[in-house]
Amino acid sequence: MSPPEQPDGAPRGSLSHHAPNGAFRNPWSLDEARFTGLLKWRWNRLRHPLPRDDGARTLRPVPSSVRSPHAAATEIAITWVGHSTLLVQLGSINLLIDPVWSERASPWRSLGPRRLVPPGMSISELPPIDLVLLSHNHYDHLDAWTVRTLATMHPEARWIVPLRLARLVRSFGVRHLGELDWWDEMAMGDTRVGCTPARHFSARTPFDRNRTLWCGFAVANAAGRFFYAGDTGMHPEFARIGERFGPFDVSAIPIGAYEPRWFMHPVHLNPDEAVSAFRALHSYHGLPRDAAMLGVHWGTFRLTDEPVLDPPLVTRDTWARVRLPAENLWILAHGETRVMRR
Image: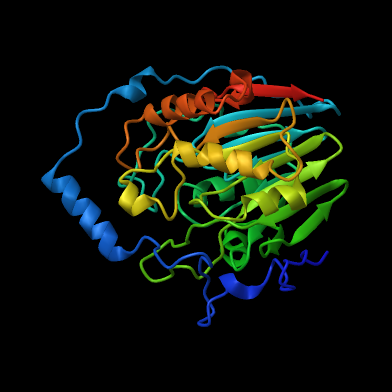
């Protein structure tokens, strides 16, 4: 299916995010996080260490209520494994989002961000996986050990990744693989997956920045419509995503890893922006009474400067301030399963 047209006649999936050098870029601004900014941030941390933060001690995994082997035809069941890893059971389809089960979000076993909380469920407890979606190649979203393990345990699963990421994922043993550009779609039986724009970047080494694309995903079938924003800063396409792929029953939007703001704002939403993005997603079709926002990308790896428990606290405050129903904001414990019945 071809991308819809913009008012000026240019296709919405135009090549503005394709850089002339063959890499990718964000089309909305040039103020992306850069190496000099990273050095400045780390230097500031050395000069002014963060205060002790024991918030993670209050976070505990809870037993999951995974539907086995599948959810009912009218159910959307979502289990938060931790960080951005989700098991989404959309009726008869079991899909994994950005699966990471390793102890560290890092290329090394003894260095890099370590889990504050164990995974909410064991990788061996997963039901049969039909579909795996990878949003980009950062280590807290694409983990080599996890991909290899899933490729062995669920060899028939279909994987969908953004442009130029297939080669790496295939090298980890994945057999059934598809690549999508922004606004592209792919069908798997009665389930359709759309690749959506995100404002972020990619890199697994200092030498491959933006050589592969980054994205979010919209998934729809008879059970309902689910949106995953991926890692992203604020951008103007949320309303168009909702227009094209919505209205969404559940939208998983990142609420953490946003401080210091001067450095993180181009690539990570803060809680206020996450709620604004959720509202923008529903600006075209209107906000359904039961539409839920699920906060992800927090409470698992200490990646940035905000206190561990601030993302859900600030998100709840913002949600209440704009008078959205409290029950429609899903802040899950690690391992918790939340079910929506249509």
